[in-house]
Length: 295
Image: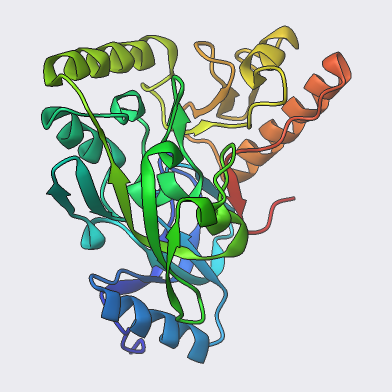
């Protein structure tokens, strides 16, 4: 009989069921805490068992090896979600869906978040990578962030201490686990904000391959340019390795055409990096996280 877990969770948990690309093997153990105390207990359990740790939100920026990952996954998702407003100030638990939070802000007439509508994943993940779109970055509206280290130390960071940068932050670079964030919206007109959300979502549907499983932008934006443009100029729209392909609609996205493997996605990214470098001399950097062993 499997050992009892310190909180809700499961052994041998499939990543294909928990990531937006729908590929990957299993984690040795998945832990799904529902409170600050359970987070501490789960992290203590992981340390006692000397397991490597990976923090998972909604799996929107992740590709896991077909062989899986022989460690513990701490899921900061639906069990740790919620929003508490005070005027235009708001506290948001890290597992809250980003779009759910944005729509709530728009409904209250709180501006500064509306362009982020449609970005997949959680608020915690968005803060960790300083998610942004159409000229808005979540770090711009952040007041403070509560986080815990893998060793169990709690801290609250000011916006300046978060060290936000293009698709990175202290939390991505330093291993801190975001549990809650405080934001300050700007006074806005709810009707205009809702119109902006509709415009952004329509643009996403038109330009992005939302009809296929994907993990968002495969590569970071290189200095002075755009990865999608470089990939398109290298003639790679539609290029595929097995069922992993560069989208015909948006060259910045890799998509799963049905039965892709994680290894195929990895090989696709390698081929794209090589082709773009040969064409332009620019070396693209992956934005999607590849976890585990890849050939």
